[in-house]
Image (cartoon, rainbow, N blue to C red; front, side):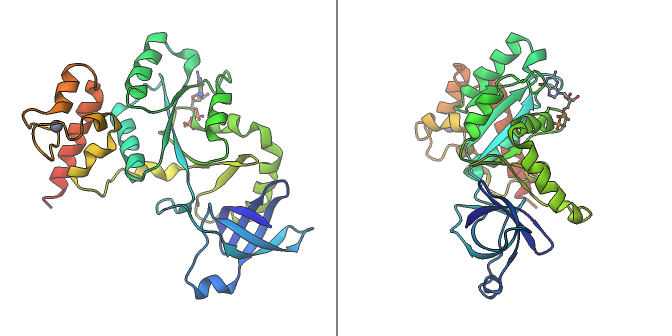
Length: 292
Ligand code: GDP
Ligand code: ZN
């Protein structure tokens, strides 16, 4: 049978098989010989040892689409970045850092702004204009009033999605809403996994319906140490792309070079001031980092 590793604890792997549930599996020796370690997110082939006890052996790891290091997880298709529209108002610098990080990992991003129920229309429109203007899909939700949860579910359909965002924005409330359809099954997972409770926190996938998984990523916030050169940063601002190659200087970094098409677009209001300022700030940091 084929399934997906949703959690790994102390040599055990918990493999979710659609319509059958979770099997507690061990990885057989062949992996150790080939130095291949199963990861959460891996699609695997398992042999059932006991259907009754829901145990099995992992006999094959299917080819990985990608692999993140921190958190260690395979086959993440996209990221859902959650912020609140208000209470707290989005920390734009942090938000843009998240976005740059996802771009640098080539992870498509869906932006979710929560707490629509207490937001002003003008606040919503501002966020929409900034981030839809960069080409990101933007969804406004209320986890509390259960608004637009269906739009989020639609965006997650058939994918494995890393959910990231600062605390207080309603991420847990939203995740609860997303998994309400399969409460019972996740209940079963946790009872099986409970004995590993006191081990350190590992990444874990939550099945939200038969072919969609989400991963809550508390560790993602420690990730915005970016390990690329300042010259690369511009490629992680998708709204700069139309102007690439049209500046006066080849290899323009859009900082203080004359004849810069990005700065011209900024002056014409085609690129948002907040985004550009965050670009400059991150650029400066990357530049300073190199001196050490
Ligand atoms: P997390 O820290 O991001 O996981 O956020 P929580 O889900 O714990 O929510 C933080 C606070 O925001 C709690 O007091 C929630 O009741 C509240 N909250 C969450 N979602 C909404 C929402 O859609 N609207 C409003 N008004 N409050 C919300
Ligand atoms: Zn330029």
